Amino acid sequence: MTAKPIRPLVRERGKKETVALTVRLPRGEWERLHQLAVSEGVSIQTLAVRGLSLVFREKGLPAIKT
Image (cartoon, rainbow, N blue to C red; front, top):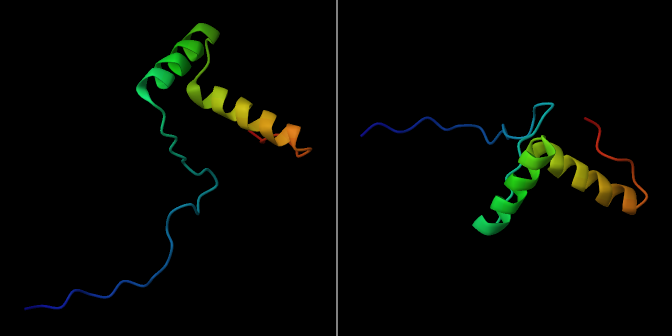
């Protein structure tokens, strides 16, 4: 039996300039969001950044830089 090499505990995720984020929604809410994005002619990504920026501004913080 050959021993597996030990990998150092170095975090690899979340180190690049852009970090991916997963959001889980009930299917019906995703469909509403998708339809809104289509009707506005923008991506769900754009809507999410707009919404998060609003939350930041409500808290007196700068909006998300894109």
